[in-house]
Image (cartoon, rainbow, N blue to C red; front, side, top):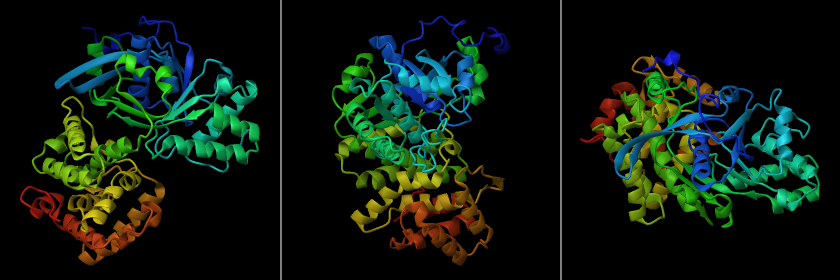
Length: 497
C-alpha cells in the first residue's frame, strides 16, 4: 500500500470521469452538508437516471472553500457510514456533478454574473446557514456582489430577466435548504422586497411570481463532515488524496413542497432516492425539527457537561441514554399531532441513527449558536407541553438549565470553545462573572437569561414555574456537578416532573 504522501491527488486528470455536465444548477454554499446531501443526490440522478446536470457552486461569503474545490476539479468523495436495510454498512462514491466553484467576491464575479445568461440553467439550491436568509437594507443592486444571499439572488434573477427579455420559459426552480420554517416562502418574500426597494418594476415582479418557482424544503441527513481524526487512514484505503472528503450517514430524506410537475424535472425516484414532492411539508418539518434536531440540541449541553463528547456515547450511556429516550418519547412526541405509531417509528430511526457505529458526531459541532437553536428546535416542544399538560417537561427544563451552565464556558476546569453571536457571549460572560454560587444568584442569572425576549421571542419568566425549576438545576449543577445532579433526581438519571 502506498504511503499517503505518495498518493495522487483526486482531480479529473488522475481520476477517469465523464465529461463535465451542462451547468443546470446554481448552488449557493460549498459546505459539507450540501456536498454530502444535495450534490450526492444530483450525482446519483446523473449516474442512474441520466439527468445530465452539472452544478456550479458559488461561495456565499468572502472566506470559503471554492479554491480547494477547483484544485480537485470539483471532485470529492462522499463516505456513507451507518445502518442500511438493518445492516451496518460503509460505502463511498466520488461525486462528479460539480463543474467548478466561483468566488464572486474576487475575480470570479464576471463569471458568476454570466451564469444568469445560461439558457440551460434551471435550478438554484442553497444552504447559507440558518441566518443566511436575511434581509439587509444596505444591499444595493449595483453591489458586486450583494452582502446577503437573498440580495445576490434578487440581483441575479433581475440580470436573467433583462437578458432574456422577461421570457417566461427562463425562470428558475429555487429550493433553499436552510433550516428555517418555510424557507422558500421566506426567501421569496425578501427577494420581492429587494425588487421593490431597488425599483425594478412591475414587469420584473410579475416575472418573479409567474416564471419562477420557490419551493419550501426539508433536509434530513446527519453529516459529521471532514473526518480529520482519521483522514490519513481513509485516504490510504481510497488510494488517492482527497482534501474534501465528507462523511455522512446512510439515511437521507429530502421533502420538497412544490408542484407535482417537479417530479419529472427532478427524477429522484428513478435513482432510488428518498425525495418526496408534496403539497404540504409541514408535518414532515415539525417531526424532524422537534425530534431529530430537538433531541440533538437538548442532549448537547447535558452530554458535554457530563463528560461525553459524541452523540453515540450519549445514547449508549446508561444515564444519558435513558434521559434522551425519555425526553423524546415522553416530552417531544406527546406535543406532536401526527399518528403516535408513525412518530414512534421515526423516533426509533432517530435513535438508531444516533447510535451509528461509524460516525463520531461530536456534540460540540451541534453547539454552534445554541441559543437560537434551542429557540427553534426545543422551545416549541417545551411551551406546547406546558399548554397540553399544565406542567413543565422535566427533561427539557433540565436541558435548558444545562444550556445556561454550558455558557459558563467551563467543563471540569477546562474551557469550553463557545461559539455564538457576540451579544450572546457577552451577556453570558457578564452574568457568570457575577455568579457567587448561591441559589439567589442562580435565580437572578436565570431570570436575566429567560427574560431576554430578543433571544426567545418572549419573556420565559412568564411560564409558570420555569424560572424557579431552571434556577434550582443551575444552582445544583454548579455546586454539586452535573453528574450527581442528574443521577440524584431519580435512580435512572431522568428528572422527575
